[in-house]
Image 1 (cartoon, rainbow, N blue to C red):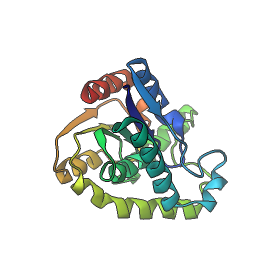
Image 2 (tube, rainbow, N blue to C red; image 1 turned 90 degrees about the horizontal axis):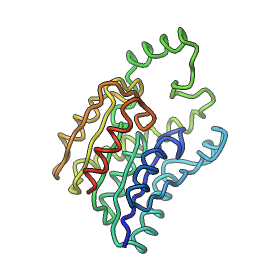
Image 3 (tube, rainbow, N blue to C red; image 1 turned 30 degrees about the vertical axis):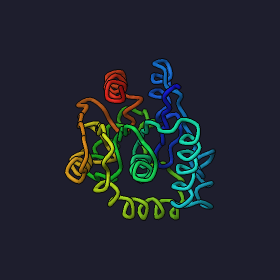
Image 4 (tube, helix red, strand yellow; image 1 turned 90 degrees about the vertical axis):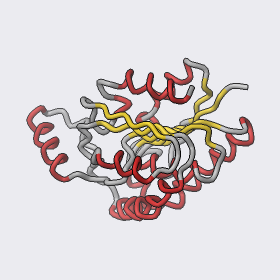
Length: 217
């Protein structure tokens, strides 16, 4: 039977954030599933009508569906998806887990301001992650999600690959150190010196994909 992998995207993002990794794993023999979390299907105003429980429930439903079909599966969580992935890994038969730029310490103000200045100078606004128009209720729901799920890392026993971009302008790289310290099980930490928040779309993505694949194998 083929191996399965569930990949969870970040807050205000979408499947495109992790799709390059999914494509890499598919080419290596995994069956990959990349759901869109509720409220992320289109314009950000859709986030007004959903909350953290909807995001957790959707991820859990996918985990249950994959478990029934495959028995166990690998799991990837990016940014907010990393928080939800920790929750899922503690409740479903996850074989191996990869946490990418997981949002433990969500915003590093100094880093974000420096990055914003560089963006303004360059005129390329595509990498600004705090998107204009994000409903305040959604931001509050994310903050509550992070607070509630942070305790999940101390319960993790599944082998876990922890990756973080050292230039991450949104989630501070100390998040990786926090997860490593809290985890009880097997763990590998890899820091990517040239990568920002969208690590699967960054200059070291191929190295990241190779390391995730090797860890999953």
